[in-house]
Amino acid sequence: MRTRLRQSTFLLAVFVVTACAEIARDPVSVASPDERPRTTTTTTTYVPTIADLDAAFGAGMYSLDTTSIGNSARLYTEPVTHVDEERPTFCRDHFDPIDLWWDGGYGIATFHLDPPLLFVGYRAGTLRTGVLRLRRAIYESVQASEATDPAGNVWRFKGRFNALCAYGEFDIGPLVMGAQVLRSQDPIDRPILVRRADSGGCGGSSGAGWTGGMELIENVAYDPYDPMASAYGDGGVSYDCGTTGSGTQYEPGDYTGGETVDWGTGTGNGGTSVCGATALVEYVCIDIYNPETGVWEEWGCGYVTTC
Amino acid sequence: MLSRILGGCLAAALTLLPATGAGQATQSAGAPRRVPVTVATVERLPVPGAPFVLVRRTNAAPRDVILLPAGADAKLLSEVVQALLVGRQAGGDTAAAPATLRVRPQRGRTSQRPVLPWAQRVLNDLRRAEARPVEGVGSVPAVEIWLPAQTRRGPRR
Image: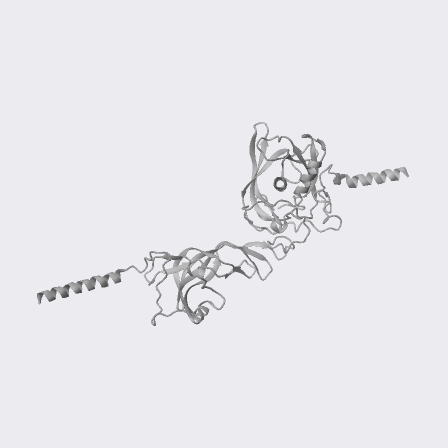
């Protein structure tokens, strides 16, 4: 009897230790970044459907990435920081295009952002919408996208934007599969205005607005020995697109689409670049050679357009 | 009759003067908007270690001179043409002060500059060119080319 009692006590102790170990397991300590969320397709766990996504965001207002490259991408996890969060959230890089909306004061322009859209980091808090629990995050596009607002202004965007993301299982018709839903919110990096609607031929990285009044030194037909530019002369086209320019603040590496920039500020000044659509903004320094000392002395630094 | 012929010659000379490169292109509206630069090859560049020399002058004609080493290729000529255009964007189509300058790119370009399609043609012509006096340089093979003006017409912001 005594031995039996001892055995029972030992078994009870083993059971308690095992059970406590299971309870004490930290649900947020996902050790491996490649570890997937536990598959919980049981009858008690609801798997969001496309209808749920449409209800939460509106059809066509979100991007669902079910690509194989996406599903093999690294997951970014973050510990639970709020008591109302019952489990950690997961997001990852996104490999499906997404639309991003922007109102620069002339109505909404829609940028179509091509993948990859890279995960940058989480913002605090989660958002519940219907059956979905989404994480606030920052994403970044690596390819520039252009959009036209209702007024006809052309904007260009590349960079970071706020988004809502959630990685998990989704019921996509006949399949239940791992996927990430991403919903863009607003740009963090401000889109730049590359062509005003009323600017005529100035600006525009596509070069579509170019009037043809400029000489392109990259053109095979350019004759360097001809002192007279054939496009000019009496009754010729105007060399300038305007006297004020687009005023667009360009950064080094931006394509202006044909407009020149102010040396001091880098803003579009309405001049016409000899590089046309390939006009690239560079920040350069100019040195002057001092023949007496044999030393190059800095004359100044500023913004220019080059081919 | 004689005065008519002389008058016609004078008018023709005035019309052709900018085209000869003796002066800079005029800045008036409707006028040619190209500015000349003389490209010359020298045996020894006046600035040690420099791949080319770009000289802007105020008191000599031609005002802008590119000095290249004898073995220059189209890529180098394209580089120096771009440097001159940058110098003209910064300092104007006509230099305000004489200077030998160079351009140091800081930010913005991650790719190589394209080679201008007509650069090799200019180099070929330069190699065939007879030596001629270039003020301040000496008697060297030289050709004159014309580049689009960089300074905007109208008020600057």
